[in-house]
Length: 388
Image 1 (cartoon, rainbow, N blue to C red):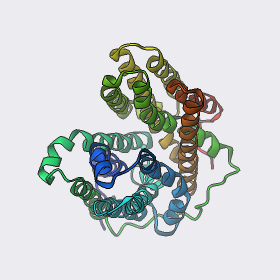
Image 2: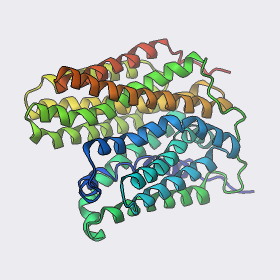
Image 3: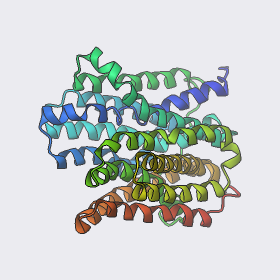
Image 4: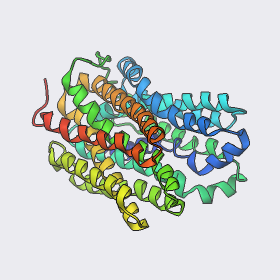
């Protein structure tokens, strides 16, 4: 009989899987200027390139749930990692814009499969510490956003400053993570595969929409702030603040993640952390729009990042806490479909508001409205018990 590994081993695998959700996506910003010059990309083409992953996260979430139902959550996670690695490597050999788009679609499909696979994997591997285990893989996700950025200056010279080699390089960790999960998964490779009979989200379920809109608030805050903050600072002649503000926005997520590692088990069924995150988000938006100096803008951006991390971590844990095991993959898939789909629409609305008003500050109006679901729908969710 195979002896199951320690929960520490399972948590390490979850942290690595969380890294795999973002490593290949955030590998692009440090080399984007080189890609633009080499492939002669227009501003619109850059926008499309950035929008593809978010769109696929929404579109492939439900098919990902179907794959989980057919092969099991852990095999689906491994498959998603390998598909994402293949897509990232293929981007390194793209010879023009359309092939770059196609390879990005492949990469995004792999990540879109991984996202609904992780909540049932958490429940299967660490059933008694769901909140903490979710905080662990979310911490890995946030680290996966930072590693490619901070390591770019050290790695690029070793790769002859080639953006193509860089994209191939960042596909290698995903293959290694997939291999580690295959070899060291809890229970071993002979462990029974937990297949789920239900895969299509119940679109009539009020809980699905409450969780989906709550998650959409965090997604919209993060993606829209990253998208509109540089334009807002450019519009107000404060381009010197763009780098520090974006750094504060992304690094501001880490303190929240580490706090949740310590407090996740105590906060997993509490509403006040989500209410508090919504208030912090409003405060951060006000800081960005009203502050006149770097410290004020950076503080506002950091508050937004902090709020995003709190909402994302706590909401990701809720499907495994609130519904029966067989419903976790399909509920998670529906939450991702709504959460990312609304974020795409809101990003477009923010751009329209900017263009119609001629003032970049108005791009943040739909973002501010998007914070309301975090507060409103949190109040409507019964977090006290699991639904049979």
